[in-house]
Length: 185
Image 1 (cartoon, one colour):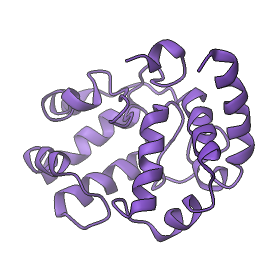
Image 2 (cartoon, one colour; image 1 turned 135 degrees about the vertical axis):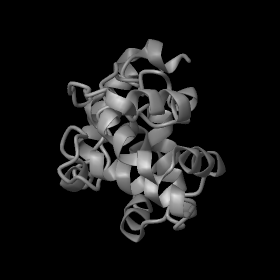
Image 3 (cartoon, helix red, strand yellow; image 1 turned 60 degrees about the horizontal axis):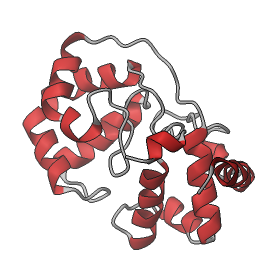
């Protein structure tokens, strides 16, 4: 897909994402602490999460219902739109969280927390969303399924979750899905 096609689809995605904007924000920066930011996520990751809601491997009744109304083109367009949206830029408070992130998370989520095709961007993510998600993996509550994540969060431990969350909520990295070069990985 060339840049012109990506731009056309991203514009379609902006229009198709009108219902997403109610919670995830018009440009993908969430209005609510418990709802993830989508801005700057890799489009392949966004598509994988849409599929996870559709198959039930990621559980949320509201999101599962919304995903069912999207056409394949809508899904791709929305993913490209949010991938091209600038993520929030915040100043990192490294503290102990930086070392913990590097030890337990950076291998998959990248050293800059910018994510990749199969791993979400964590830099600049909503603190409350991160905290909820990490605790879900730790307690194996059933909303999210990933043996590697459960293992990593178990090694991280409950007492270190807030330090990593504080680090990530303030971290920033270059958007992972906004350019053709970034998508060639």
